Length: 553
Image (cartoon, rainbow, N blue to C red):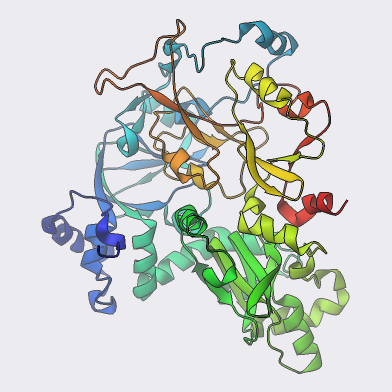
């Protein structure tokens, strides 16, 4: 017998002391909070001790990088930081790969340059020219060598003591919009997303401030990008924005709970956080800002998946419109549950009735039922894709097993493109005669990118695929452990002579993360697709359900 694990069994900062908590309680941002508003199971002092950590940075160290998927916010306790506004820092300075395609002769030379020894590297490549990397694992920081040059060449803004930053990306699960580095030696309080969520939940002032920041910085753009609100004038749009409610459902690190559910054999919407339930009466339209949600209907004692919604989709709009037009309130005919972590904007019904519904007759194209946009006759295919979360994939490797003759030409082509070492495994989950292979799907919601300490795993500048910079990967395995699909592998690397590279401190082999990069540097695209002699393999985007048409042929 053992006690059930609790969230605070693993503190974010294991070295936090009661003295540190007392010091933090005196900080203006925190002292303005009301401790008596927090419940006994999540006291403010407990959040500070278990969901935060104190970190010291040297001048020049990068705190967050533009494009990162962060899961924490930062409060400046001492020192000064700089936000890089324009232009962005060069990609090589923040651990990224430079977008560069091989020419014809470089691509051809791969045929005789490949090694028979697996995972060969040139150790001299790991010397970073413009920046330096110190530390290991989560404590690793990327270090800028020439701060004056950065300040001369880039427009920046200074952040000083008491400033809070990074909270919108952390709570909304969206990429960081700018890079931030230490201008002087500084001390920061890092608050992981669980603590941010609790503080936002129980402190009204903090919640209002965070919500207002989102209204000021991102909500207007989010509404304008929607075909529903794009034609409103400035005054109307502002009134809509002022009334929007922010909601989140599910776990930020959904990959962990997903793996547990799969290992225990549990599946279906009954195990997912409910956003709305069939039979409930709606009080507004829901807009998905980030993540995925399942739309289902009751079928006997269970649920049948109708479709799924992703970022930019909306739920409930047609029903609310018809209820307004007919003067009759109607319950929801479907349920909506969170597939992992979902960030939702709720637009109240009275706002729709005032600013949108009266104009709907002049724009009937807006009356789109997102819940039916991906509905297909093959419910089993949809159920399979949703349960295995393949809906997250934008470039999944789909193999028609009726055409595949197991010749492994796709694997050999992949190896030939990557120095003799393939970057995927030809097996995976199957439905009927289709298989999604264990190859990186370049997800819409790449949880593998959350927590990488050096920015080695990132979206490429050209094409937006998820790639790993081998030069700045430190082998911490954060990305491999986070991938819900086991599509990232840790490999022991060797020098040009074939000898294993050994860490002098631990005397253990040095490992690197590897995965499919869609042959990003090859002019012809993914070699696996081009090499298949029977057209059995394709790279597909599950978004929109378009790929499911293949199942119906």
